Length: 292
Ligand code: 13P
Ligand code: SF4
Image (cartoon, helix red, strand yellow):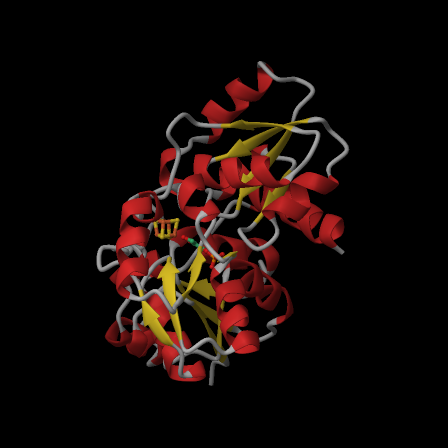
């Protein structure tokens, strides 16, 4: 009997969230991945999340229920482009957002997630920081870290889902629900973040609701998180209808059930080259070292 643990990201479909052994944001999932000692880890999320699990726990079999679940933002940055760009800024540290390929992580100095990007950058000794690949998160970090030059790369790098959440979307929702707290993810444009009551990762948005128990929130992030907040906390969630990540929705309950029944065809197994794992792991572990 193969022992299996199912890790699920907060944006997954409701039926997938209900199959979770552990549900969380990218940082919590990475932390959990380090400590799991089951034979098989099923990662319900997008490709970079499954890669992080493999990087941090390479001796386990890591499975993604559909290998076509790929983060639209992470896919667009190639390691060779970052390598070339950093040559132009030899004194800069390179911070890779978790939403990057393993190759990009291997090229960077330290990883961060949306939960700790400001902390990671502010604790770096370097004055110059290349931040990849999300220009919006880079702008949020820049606005919240003093005395550092944050250089976003690549040009126009952003999450298509969060970038499409506009200030006018937010204003329209606030006009209809003036009593709601406004919580947004830092992948949103800076002007949207500035208009919010609170900015945080998916689990930080969840934690805000758990601690403060607002009756209603306007949520500037992917709609999937709303299911968890409403179900577990009884808080009413209003989100823009278009905030749906198609990459996250590729995974269905049926596909997860198939894997749990032991049907794991080759493409679903996450395999990474050993040297790549070693290099990428250094970058991920540097984040854990910096943030304690
Ligand atoms: P979190 O790390 O906040 O869960 O976000 C992951 C992500 O892909 C946001 O779009
Ligand atoms: Fe990637 Fe955006 Fe989807 Fe998150 S919401 S997985 S950043 S495309």
